[in-house]
Each structure stands twice: as structure tokens, then as C-alpha cells.
Amino acid sequence: MSDLVRFSVSMPEGLLQRLDEFAERRGTNTNRSEVLRDLVREKLVDEGRDVPDEEVVGSITMVYDHHTPGLAARLDKIQHRHHTEIVSTMHVHLDHENCLEIIAVRGQGRIVANMADCMLGLKGVRHGRLTCVATGSTMATDGDEGHAHGHERDQW
Image (cartoon, rainbow, N blue to C red; front, top):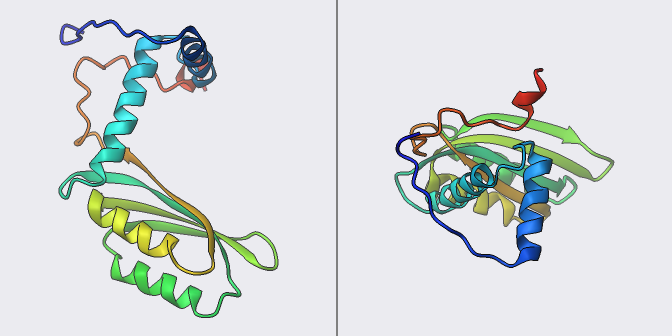
């Protein structure tokens, strides 16, 4: 903990109240410092996707109309082109028209983001999102050995 640096943050009371509510929902015992560290890490990981050599892991989640002509073939082609970045996929039939696909990815941020953009921009993809998290090797955790992930305190 000796590497921790203290600093002050000023914000409107309403925003601070929302931060405290957010902390409580996440199970961090209303520890503002922990919540702020998590939010900063999240934003840095988002930026890291655009740094060519930054490794990210995450998922591409999309809902698409499987009746769209040629869509499945185009999605397959993109996925085969990026087989080294794809760790796993899950395909769910939601109803007669819609499918949910979740693709676990790992690789250089720019490549993963480009792959997601290619898939999510296809005609017939109704909604989608790339969500990334940092790997241990890409996000410094110095002074953070006691980091709780919310539900750990629930003693599963």
C-alpha cells in the first residue's frame, strides 16, 4: 500500500451520491477509492483498445436477424479471418428471427476492435457491443493486492 497516492476530488453532491449508490451496488462497502480506481481502470482499458500493441480480453455480444441473406456467411468469414483472436463462441436462438452470439476474444486492442466493428456494422446485426477488460499484464495493480471484486465478501 506504500505506492498509493492520496489526492482530492471535487464533484457536485448529487454526483457523489450516485457514486456512493454505485459503490453499494457493486459490493465494495461504499469505498469511494476502490470505485474510482475501478472506473479509471475501465476507461484506460477502453482507450487501450486503440493502442496497437495493448492486449485486451473481452467479448463481442450481438443480436442479429438470421434471415438476413448472407449475414451468417459474412460473420463466419470475419471470424475465420480472426481465428487467433477468438477464444470461444456461444450461439443462442432467441426466437424465430433473432440470434444472440457471444464471442470471447483476446488479442491486440486495435485488431479486436476492428474485428468487432466489421461484425457489428453488417446489415442485419440489430444490436451489439464490444466489451473489454485488461489482462493482468496490461493493467498495473501495484498497491492493489487487497482488491475486492464485490461478491468475494459474500463467501461463496
